[in-house]
Image 1 (tube, helix red, strand yellow):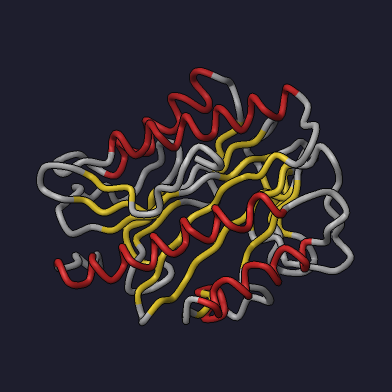
Image 2: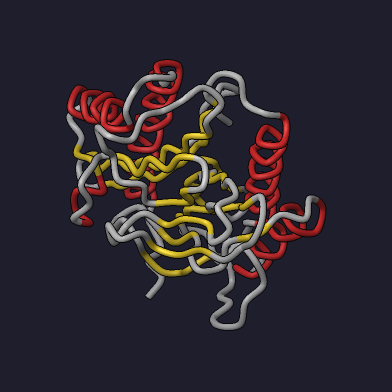
Length: 254
């Protein structure tokens, strides 16, 4: 069931999303070679505690405040003291905050140090596909319009693999709500986009194949061919005459 949010609920979600944007502004500049992904997660925990929130992923029984996925890891990377970040890595930070019961959700891929041009291009394409998906997310359109827009950029323009096993979703009062938002054309429900929807749009784009698998830890999702991946995400709210990017930050990560 799709949960349409009222003005009060959207205001609460907006506050949580603005706090999450502030988190990215603070944490991203601190991600550097030699840190472990657990070190980065500790920074996230510290920020969320400072603002009186709770990491949203804790409700999902996930062992971390952030999903931190490096290079060929697509999503759901579990923070670890053993996973060290190196110069040239792509590090995706997927974070949610529960602030007074209102949930925000966003992801940005950090380019650490001297990143190769082919990976910079992948990040550029993923961010471009996210913008295209958001532009298609307007009242009166359908969910598949978002899917088509993302896929047209990531696969049609750049020829990258668009992950189809995982997708965006409704968010705001729960971590994962209806509807599901695929990043490529798929059969299934195709609801009309309505005012009051709050959606997490999140392209997961691979340099090679779109096929993925789950690691032995039961969480981390990796590309099947070992090529690198990029993940970008914003939470948006749909109104009658516009769509607001609630997690919008700045050119540092967006």
